Image (cartoon, rainbow, N blue to C red; front, side, top):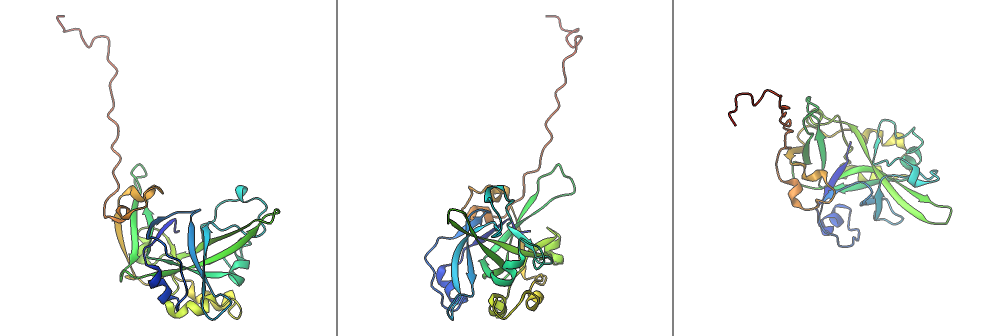
Length: 248
């Protein structure tokens, strides 16, 4: 799965990546978490793609009360074309979600020990684009909410040592095909929903600072290990005869 990611690229760099689209200025984001706004790029109405901010956590259009609906931050690519929550978006609202890496946690065999966080970034330090879906939910009062999720797939061998799922990465040469929801049906882009090859990412162990959404600075990406859990020392209850040899 993908529960946190970052976007450190400057707007100018992203504008070039997407063929010259206009983007508002925004600061580096080191620890993007669910329910926060994320950048989503769609095909747009003109020749250039369009960018919009959506809430991370997809709400299907048929949901009556978003407050009673489970937050969907990821969708399994293997079933996205058939599940009710995703199949309409897969056909009509595919997007690209730019990132400069994501975080994943490995759970040790000893479940008493903490999970180890990893910062997984492109080996070339560039920008990657995750395959995403967006929906527009409309309330009975006319209110609207744009939301989105990230598609995941089976991890490659390298990332599989950390977690069995990873985001689907769309390569630049496939941007147009992925975003083309007019002529490219889900079955036409199914070949794009696969894991990248080993070596595409570097995985760096980082401390548990990333676990807290309030930690939003570069310190969350500094190498480090999770603090091991040290069992509390057991204290022995005094017995009645403990002091039998005391003189006073």
